[in-house]
Image 1 (spheres, rainbow, N blue to C red):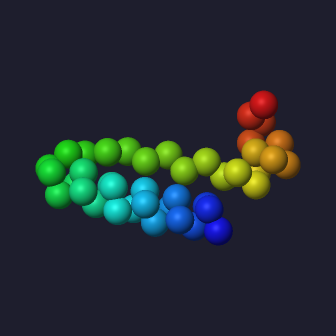
Image 2: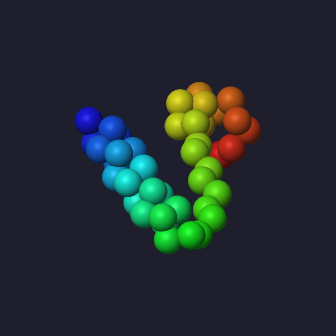
Image 3: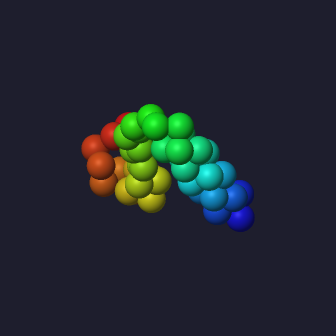
Length: 42
């Protein structure tokens, strides 16, 4: 459940940044693909 909580907190913080007038780019890694080494990442 820690991952779900982290996702909720990230969404709240991003909304605060947007409310301040900033632009952000969010990169969401696919953890399962990385674990399976399907992304080519080490």
